[in-house]
Length: 309
Image 1: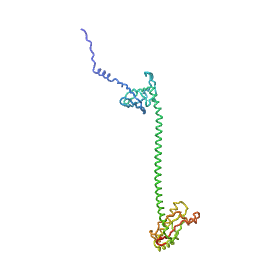
Image 2 (image 1 turned 60 degrees about the vertical axis):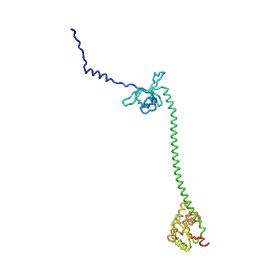
Image 3 (image 1 turned 120 degrees about the horizontal axis):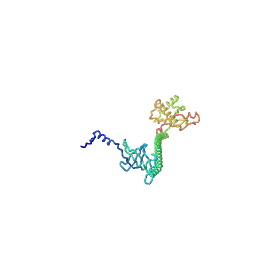
Image 4 (image 1 turned 45 degrees about the vertical axis):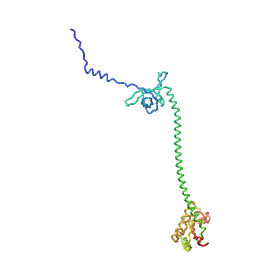
């Protein structure tokens, strides 16, 4: 009787070990190739415009990325190239895969030599154009700044001109009023007169003239329908504006005495006239002549129609 050969039965542990060995083999990601045109570089990445979906792809370049120019009729040879050759406008073929950060990491970037030359020529032609655009932009900005400055200056000049025109208009109105007022004096008779002299640059009436002015006021009160005319003058020493102001203040000072001490109502006085340096009675080349010109003249006037003359 033949002996039977024992049959070995695999234990569950052996079966599990075999299954684990089959399932735990590393899965190598398959390389992906994409084609497109570089339209930008930023740090370690470049933007690739592709015809596939999505149309724009960001490619990560690393130190291990192989950059090469394909050569030969069948592109069988590859010439190693620096990464700086990856310029915008260059058509490329990128081989790589998605990394753990969900980026398309490039293992290799290939391109044709003719495409690189065309991209470089395009860059060379574009550079002068960009320089012209930058120069034109700078010129436009400079022109706009100049126009803005000119407009601001013109606005300031216009405001100053308006102010000057207003002053001129006011002066013309005052002059016209004075001309009207003093132009009517031909219709009057002068029945009395007093002159008050002032020190250089002074506008205060010296007490010695107050008695003279009060006596003139008393004389005026005896005249029917009298009017007192007050005219202030200045010497021609100093600026015209200063002399005009001095003549006005001197006339006002005398008018105050006529009203307050002489009892003459303002209705019987012509508005004080600031005559400035007009009607000089003596030469301003001497101190004596200057003193004669620093004066206020007060006259008693009566209309000729009333006096019958």
